[in-house]
Image (cartoon, rainbow, N blue to C red):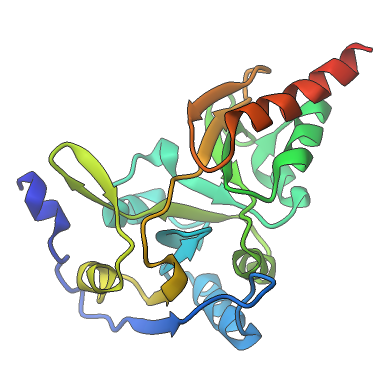
Length: 230
C-alpha cells in the first residue's frame, strides 16, 4: 500500500454507522443532553464513536477495549493513545502521581494539554492522560463513569500526518467502520494540536508545542516546585 492509499475510504465491514451532525456548541460548551446520553450509551456498550475532542477529530472507546482495535482504525502507535478522564478521581484508576504533580495538574486541567504520567498497571511505562476542556466530552465521560481511550484521526501521506476534519472526508473514510460519527460544524476546520508534556520523571519535558503556551505551563509547574522548597 502506498502513502496515498492510506487516505482512501476503508473497506466496509457490513455494519451501519449512525451519523449525528451538530451545528455548534451551546454557550457553556455543552450539547443537548439527550445526545450526550446517546453517545455515552454507544460507548458503554463497547462501540467505537468518532467525535471531536476539543476541536480535534478522533475515535473514543472504553478503556477496556483492546488497543489493537483502535490502532487498526487510526494507525496510531499504542504509546500515543490518550486516556481521557472527566475528574481527578479517575487519575487514581490509571496513573501514579505525587502530591506536587497532582497540584500541578489541578492548575492546568481541564484544557488542551496532554500529560504523560506513570502507568498504574505497568511499572516503567508512561501513558498520555487528559481532562478535555469541552463540557460535552466531560459530560460523556462522566456518564460512562470510567476513563476512555482517544486516538486522533490522520491522513498519512507524503511522510506527513494531516489531521482529518472535513465532514465529507470523515464520512468517506469512516462510514461503515465505526458505530457512530458525531460532527460539529464549528470544528470542521483546521485546528492546532494540543500541547504535550511529560512529568513522569519528576521534571517537566515539553514534547509538542501546541494550543497551550509553554511559558504558561512552565510558570505553573515551577510555581509548585518553588512552593515545596520553602
